[in-house]
Length: 114
Length: 117
Image (cartoon, rainbow over all chains, first blue to last red; front, top):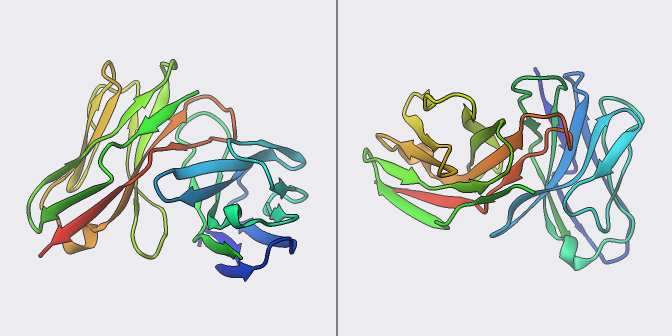
């Protein structure tokens, strides 16, 4: 089954404690992205990757890091989480090339930073 | 930069009736895609319908249809014969046809749809 998985699904942590949210896809997609969802703001792209070792900032990258060492994995790293990073996070992937390039979303990770 | 605006934070509809959700966008591009996503309480993002900007014909998927007005930069979603399972947050989204920003989607703020029995 084609899918994007994220772990953990729920996380409560304290300010300053480094954390990683993992994302993995089994569709051999080149493109992967991280979004955060906040009430009244919709989803906003944090970082994206167009292939292994190729990453770039999205609209709201401050306070986040990513890496793409393998094609299937795209972890999101919060080196020193702060309460304003409390949010719902989605990983998404799609193939490259012209055409529809459907985005597949993970199930979401609810993060609370106290 | 592209922007997407959903001016209706909340909407409600009676079961079996029709409701229209509004979306406007701003872009200087001529080739792009527009989407409506549904997010039920499970939080899963579900693609409802897609429209290619170069197609004049409005997309339709069963009870869901769009009214795409390219010149007005408007992209509304019509849900016919509303069902209780249609209750969800609905997001309008834009994607450039080019290969930039990793197929980035630009989302609107969302419209929370309630379906009353």
